[in-house]
Image (cartoon, rainbow, N blue to C red; front, side, top):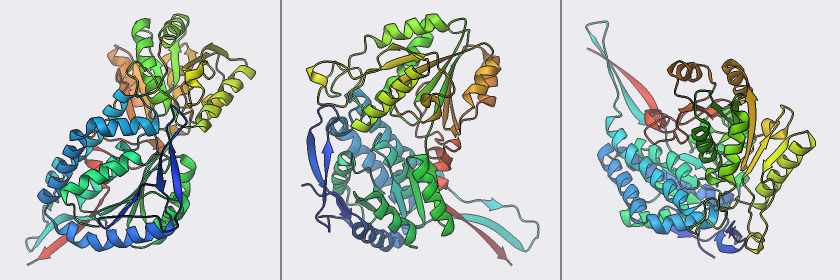
Length: 478
């Protein structure tokens, strides 16, 4: 059993002696057994982060930036090893895993530079005998809670700006997929990061969260995950006047406007839908196609989906990998059955692939469906599934209205070459991230976050750093 708790610069065994199996989604086999902590480990990590905070915040931003640049370099230097670990525990293809690892390194590089420009302000004085200014003060120790689908990138989006701002951090990665983060922390030990600045706890979600919420030494919680859990955390943090930022669910529309060639539209749709088999918070999950091109679009999409090669993400010939766990397979089957029962059509896929190579893993065919109605579960719930529902429309305003008809507002996508329609969609779509002819808009230097019930606050860009600061106003009288 490998150690998975890193507190105050040391690896520790689980106090309870409990462990958790990590399963390769492509084979169904156990690839590791890690220690599984809880309240005891979380409490120790809080104490370590609290004790390390005064010295860490006192370092110059240039020294902290040096550590962040070192973490980025460590990730890039070990890219292949880390990517293989990520693929083995999550299932995504190796190229996708390498993309995630590079994106995580981008976070540390970006904040290593951005923090050097994160200064206060000198405010013009109204009276001759006063001077006004602001300075930045780190909020304090932070608990960063991240999910399984992007186990290193989503952790990095929290850890990098927090460390840059002068906060100390406790990261609780998803216990089903902790191996990549464990290995990254192991590799960063060579950087001699001060003990207690970065802590890692793999453990029971409820027990750890209760400690992070209840302990006054934790000044902020950053959470990425489901709407239900995020809502619960927000309520408890509000009761305690504790800062929290949330990146929650999404149900992203993709609008294909009638000026786009069908082949170009279909290519974009397949790329947008099947990255990580739809298990992406900003994954396009509702596809709105003008009725004049809908039939041709469906045929073109099916032609492309039918040749996607399903397999182990480590195999170079695989275009798509497995789903993460058996629950995701069952949820996908349930969506398909609901579509069938309510009159929808399955144009391609809709089941587990056949063959001995797929018997043990959590595989599901990339699926294309049409004749979708509002009462179908695929439109009512965040799917996190490789199912592409195609919905026709006649007028662009109709498509925008249908796109906005969801409690979520994380991302939205548009395919068009018409400038007027571009601006109209950008202004009217209710989403925090809008990709116009861009199916992969996330970047470290850009804001990431949603509207409506998709969360509060932003990660990335300068806003991601500002959320780990308090602004102190100073007035000096002569």
